[in-house]
Image (cartoon, rainbow, N blue to C red; front, side, top):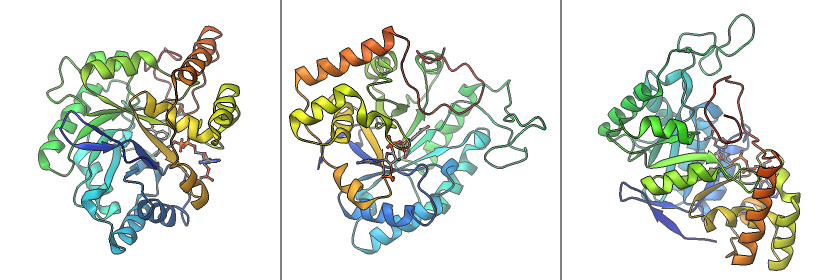
Length: 309
Ligand SMILES: NC(=O)c1ccc[n+]([C@@H]2O[C@H](COP(=O)([O-])OP(=O)(O)OC[C@H]3O[C@@H](n4cnc5c(N)ncnc54)[C@H](OP(=O)(O)O)[C@@H]3O)[C@@H](O)[C@H]2O)c1
């Protein structure tokens, strides 16, 4: 288990390993959160959009009842795209579900606005079935609201998620508060080095999501990952989590299975040979145009990612 932490640009500590809750089904997520938090995880990542924050809150409450202290757990939530013009309302909803009076970090989930008065609170649709997106929205306006909620004390830090280099370069010259974090998909099949490098230069901490390739963990069988796992006598998942720590990032691992929640706490120090092998794999995928982005909702917006300009 790693007790490693990093220091954010706010001065606060953030754990290196976090617990993910996306796609954790009702009836499973409360006990998974309770198990994770009472067995060493110190960061829980949730979002209004996941539709399960009430249960995440129940899991936290159960862990607190067993003696875990609120101030020892770093809780992350995100404002969903239908709330981009009502950020404080979005944060209030998250806090109510979580049963907390503050989160440690509140993120812009994706930099766009979906119709706040549409057919659904989370996924409004147009009559033709496409997502109901407000096209003339400027993500800088959303960041102004994030800066305002920081001042309320209901979140200790603010950050972004799914921000490309292009979007960061639009935001940073006008931001009054530099985001503490950019949470992005990150693994050997999608290193997004240009975003990681820019964030490092600007003091923005990277939180890596979908380290196993998301649902079902498709990266567990990637050849260099299997080879490195054999060499260290660990599971492929350990290599994938350790890769992100070796890059100086926080990494989020999701599971609703207690044995897997346990095994995901194992981290190894990758040596230079391991890192070179993974970098060569990433470079080869880049060269062949075979980078893999596993999480890409059909917004139909050009976010400017290296693999999806
Ligand atoms: N900001 C964003 O837009 C964004 C997007 C995606 C994700 N996230 C965050 O990042 C977290 C992690 O990403 P993710 O959920 O997409 O995917 P992930 O953590 O890469 O992979 C989760 C999948 O791997 C399985 N798994 C976990 N540990 C395993 C192990 N040791 N052996 C075998 N299978 C294992 C899980 O199944 P079981 O549960 O059955 O074990 C699940 O199917 C999310 O939960 C969420 O909190 C954020």
